[in-house]
Amino acid sequence: MSDNSKVHDVVILGSGPAGLTAAIYTSRANLAPVVVEGLAAGGQLMNTTDVENYPGFPDGIMGPEMMELFKKQAEKFGTTFVAGDADEVDLSSRPFTVKAGDEELRCRALIVSTGASPRYLGVTGEQEYAGKGVSYCATCDGFFFREKPIVVVGGGDSAVEEALFLSRYGTKVTLIHRRDELRASKIMADRAKSNEKIEFAWDSVVEEVLGDGQKVSGIRVKNVKTGETSEIECAGFFVAIGHIPNTKIFEGKLEMNDEGYLEVEEGTTHTKIPGVFASGDVHDHVYRQAVTASGEGCKAAIDCERWLESQGH
Image 1 (cartoon, rainbow, N blue to C red):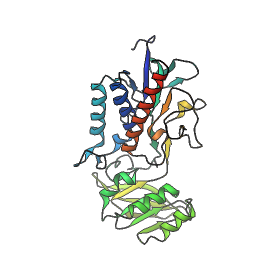
Image 2: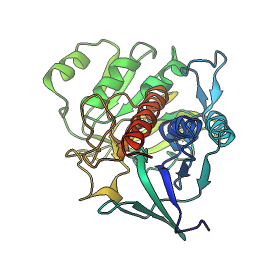
Image 3: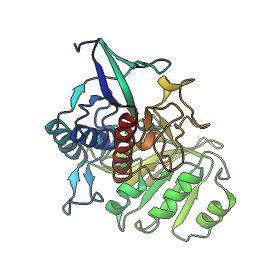
Image 4: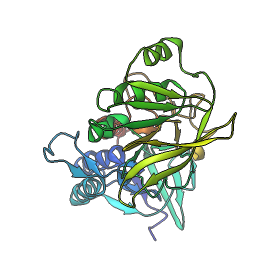
């Protein structure tokens, strides 16, 4: 248990690329950050096998191994870690208060890097084959399915965007949607329909992800109008039904957009509350890459350091 009377310069919520990069920068600035890791310590990269697009790793690196290196680097410069989720935050008075299990942390500044979680289908085989053919990020994993059949599920802009991107790699891409027309914008839908590599399975839902125990071999789909089931062969199965930002504890406390992503002042990581900063997928719903999250963690740390200095700390 930490000393509840101590006021830390900065507490960081989240231990993905954004949170740990913020920790590296703030600890090197002698701010002795405390990172509340979250139950999903390490963030979304913990569910990724090979990371091949992060600069500096020409042979690729496993997601969990990469996050372990991030954490070691932060620890080396003096970051301390608290396990588990932040359950409650009080931003109404200063110092701010963060409750995480039995810990109560008080701080002058707060960096929120709690990330986002992909929406899961919740079908049999999805969890079993996560990282073994089931993916939630085309930009991250499309490369692994060159010259192989790919399936995407979803009907919005992000699903169509993933299908278009994946058509560069796969022999064909089948887009599964539960209705008979896409929710995506007309321009995106037209692009997909005119792409000869993209096929559509309309009025269909995924019932099961199939595989040989090691990797995905196909999926079972059901036509919601006829009740018929069929199997579609694929090596890669991409779930593109959206993400949920991990912002529940900030409802009514920080500004969010309609989808629950934190709002920041243009070109900065400042939220509307001075001394509270946001970085990574908790507010970035466009790029969602480890390298952009790291960049934002760096920005948040520098913004935080300058703000604390302006307050005389």
